[in-house]
Amino acid sequence: MQRVEKEIARLIDECDYDEVTRLFSMLSGGKRLRAKLILKIASDHEQAPLLAAIVELIHAASLLHDDVIDEASLRRGVPSVNATDGSKTAVMLGDILYSKAFTELVSFDKDIAKIIASSVTALSKGEMIDVKMADEFNSDEDKYLDMLYLKTATLIEAAAEASAILAGKDSSLHALYGRNLGLSFQIIDDILDITADEDTLGKPAMNDFVEGKCTLPYIYLYKVLDEADKKRLIALHTVVLDEQESSWIKQKMQEHKTIEKSFELAQKLSNEAMNAMKDNAELVGILQTMIKRSY
Ligand code: FPP
Ligand code: MG
Image 1 (cartoon, rainbow, N blue to C red):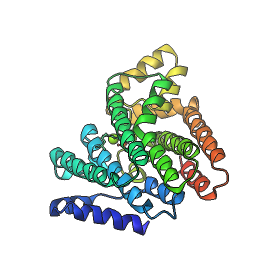
Image 2: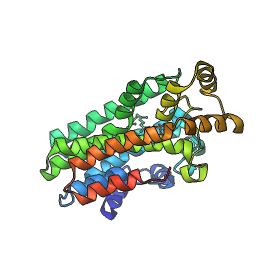
Image 3: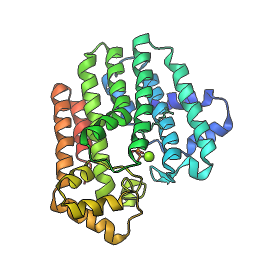
Image 4: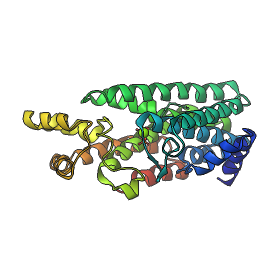
């Protein structure tokens, strides 16, 4: 991972603007899941650290823009750039990061560049669908999962597929692994939004529903509630919840085991990915660690 951090630092340096270096140094790097995946799949390839740095810059850019769109003030436990330096700066920093990433991407084979580039179209489309869906209470599970695939899984899928091509490995099996890892990662994130506290999350707890996002535990809950409670749940959508309201939601979720049901889907997707990679202990390990994040 040191090689990836070095590549990221080099790319930032090449932007040749102190303000970019300063702002980038304020960001928390996060788990670097995508970079770790690329290094594990294409460990021996000399271009792997650069590909990992490119994907991390794209991911960082997407989060900068996402925090502007969501008006989020915290990211990974630190104030977001839109909170400290304003939305305009956050958008412009995101533009620089992702255009720099694309400049570097042209040094890769065309098929690899295309996989990464088209995943960015998909994730941008996913973000747009997500924002649109938040306007109304959504109880359609398939619609939600389609959006999740675009918004979160496509870049992880592309990272796995592209690094498999780089390493001369089976690209479709690795793509399946990446896709399911991404989906199950996001489902667990959605669960943690409800079950974890602000200190653990690095952002306010139970915030998805306030932002309008009807994640799986809410979708499953809606399906099993009686008419009066269905109405009560819809009335709380996009509302800043008080203690009593959030306790009611949590208690109903407990009663109907909707967190467990969501976790089962994450586990099913994760098992499929493990099966696809059963000979690769390291890739299986990434899934196991992810699924074990407490909830
Ligand atoms: C986080 O979702 C957002 C994403 C994973 C993707 C955001 C994508 C864009 C803004 C498209 C623009 C892309 C580029 C490269 C500039 P979330 O809000 O559900 O998660 P959070 O709780 O971590 O904010
Ligand atoms: Mg967000």
